[in-house]
Length: 200
Image (cartoon, rainbow, N blue to C red; front, side, top):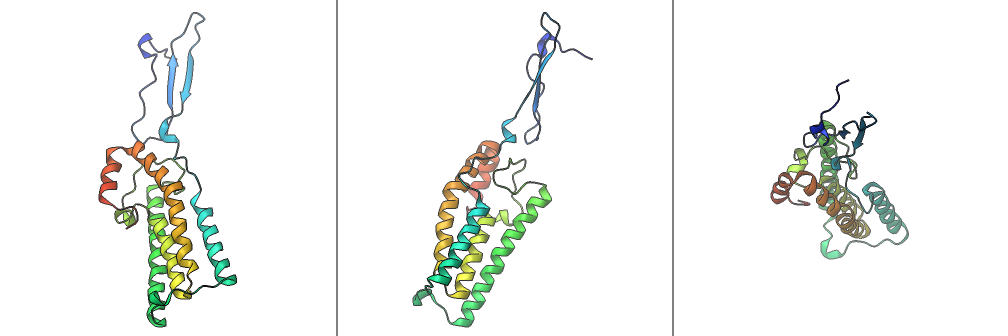
């Protein structure tokens, strides 16, 4: 086995940016002739620390909206209610658009072999597909879907609940994600952030 020289007491060459590995460092043999090596966890292996997980939050929001619509139904204000046929068309388009955003974002993750879970570490900055138009297409798509349901059912709750949910998503999930991506990708993310809006 090759024993490192005195000049190699620092960590071995660190992996390139984005590599999902650990740094391996060895300390030269001491008086007892033993080689001490340690493995150090790199920062990019740790994802953002979120205040809440988005999937349970959206499930809870949907359950609350359904419950309120069933037990305390409130119709949309007359000022924003369209005639039935245009309302059904617009609502259907909103649902289709929201589902397409979610599906498109999921496809980008699969193609890049990235974990879509927001708390997972990111090895690549995803800017393809719907990410060219929105930095958060999954959250935007979820809100669009619920607003589409609001139009189909003429339900105020399916309009208000996702708006409240988006506020929670922004402060508990998106802002920590953005801070992590800024730290992780630096200027590359800052340029992307300047060219693409958070929602649309």
